[in-house]
Length: 632
Image (tube, rainbow, N blue to C red; front, side):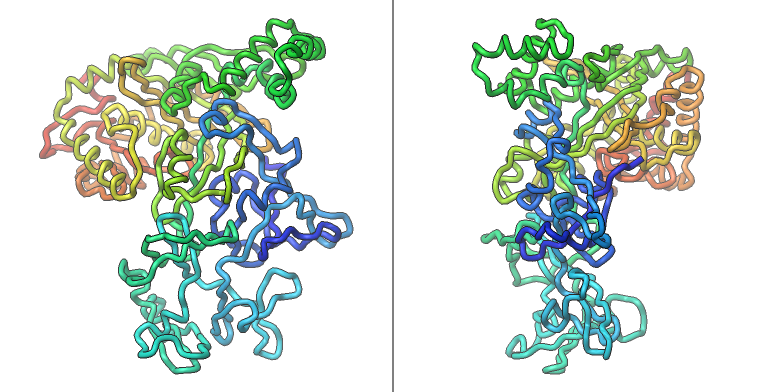
C-alpha cells in the first residue's frame, strides 16, 4: 500500500517558489514512479497539462530531510555516491485550499511549451497567443469570448544524446517556401478530415497562407539538414556542440524516456542490524579521528546494548566499502547476491533494528530434482533502486560501474549540471522465491544438443549488432544458459500471475547467470520477487510457493504450458535472424512476454525452444529442450 505520493509544482523559470502561501500542485504520482517511468527528464501528462520533472539542483530543498535519506553501501560504492534520497512526500497546507508546500514537492516545468486551442486550432506558446490561467499552470486561449483551455501539441524532437526540443512548427510550415519563414507567422494545426491519418494533418500559416502536411514528419530524413540544439529543459540549459540529427517523436511515446536504473539487494553484511546502526551514524563515525573511535563506538555499543567487538566488526565492514576495498563490478555484486540466496540466513533483531534479509533454503521436491538443486524462500527482502540517468530514442544497457563514464561520454543524459554526492532512489521491501538450476544438468544438456548452437550464434550476432548500432558496450554474451534461465523466469511469472492471483506487473525477475571462469563457478538461478515502496512489503504469498507441494504444482504447470503457444507453429518456428531489435527466438505475447517492469532485459533474449525443444523440421538441426531431455 502506498502511504505517500509526490506532488509536482510548476517551476517554469527555474527560480525557487515562495513557501509563504504554498503553490498550486500541477499533479501527483507515486513516489516510486519518479525513479522509473516518470523520472527526471520524462514527459508526464498530469492534471494540468504536460510537464517534465526537473533535475537534482531543483530537488535539493525538497529532499534534504534526514527521513528521506537512505543507504545501500554496495550500490553507493558502484555508483560513486555517499547516499540516496527518496522522492519527497506531498504536504498539503492547512487552510490552503489544496495548495502544497514547495519544500515537499518535486518541481516540474511545462513541456512542450507549444499548445493548441481545440476550438480555433491556433498553436503557440504562453504570451503568443495564449495566456496563463488563474491556477498558474494551465494555458488558455482568450479569443472566443470566454477562455478555452488549450492542450499540449503531440509532437516534439529528440536525439540519442538525451536532448529534447520543441517541434519546429514555424520552420515546418514554411520549409519549402521561397524566402523561408514569413515575417509574422500565425500558425494553425488543421485536419483535412478525410481520416485520422497523420497525412491529413497540416500546419497552416494564416499570414502567408502557406501550408505543409505532417505526413512525412516521422520519416528518418524529415529533419535532414537540421542539427540538434542541445536543449535540456530539465536542467534549464543548452548543451552546445551536439552533432546528432534530431528525430520527431510523439510526446507520449515510450521512446521519449528510458530510465537508467541501478539496483542492489541488501544482503549480509549490509543487511545486518549492526551494519545498519553503523551506517545511520556514519556521518559522525566517518569524520572522527582514529584515537576517538574506541570511546565513541563504546558509547554506541552501550546505547544499543551490544558488545563492542560486534559493532567494531560492522564498522570495519563499512570502512571497506568507503575505501573501495570491495569488488564493485556488477558481476561481483550478482555473485554475492547469488551466494546469499543460496544460504540460510535469519539474523537476530538488535537494539530494535530489524535485519533486512531473511532466507530459508529448502530442497526441491523429488520430481524437480533433475532440474533444480535448491529453493530459497526469501521472507524478508530489501531492494534499493537508484535513478542514475536516462536515454531517449533507444534504451541504453550498461552495468552500474560504467554509468558515470557513459554520462561523461554523452551516451546517457545526466540528472544534474554538476556531479552530486547523491541520487534519487526508491526502497522496495518484500519477499521472493529463488530457484537454482543444477549446473551439471545444464552442462550435460548443452553438450548433448549441439544443434541449438547455430540458433544461439544467430542471437549473439544480432545482439552485438544492436549494441554496436546504439553505441553501448556489452559485458556478456548470449548463451544457452542465459536463454534457458531467462525464458523459464518469464514462463514462471506468467504461471504465478494466472494461477496464484498475482498481477504480472507486480512481480519482477532478477537473473543470476554467468559462465564459469577462473574466478567464479557458473551461476544459473532466478529470483522472482514482489514488494512495495513505503510499506513493510507483501503478505507472504511468494514465500508460500516455496512449500514443496505448491512449488511442484507451479513449476510442472509452467513446463506444461510452455510446450504450447497460441501462436504456434508460427511462434516456435521463428527465425532468430529475423528478430530485429527483440534479439529473441520463439517468444511472443501468447507465451513468454511480460510487462516491461517485470523484465530486466526489456523483453529481449528469450527463446522458448530452450525449454521445450526445436520445432519439427528445424533447418539448423533438432535439439531437445532442457525440460524434455530428462526421461526422453
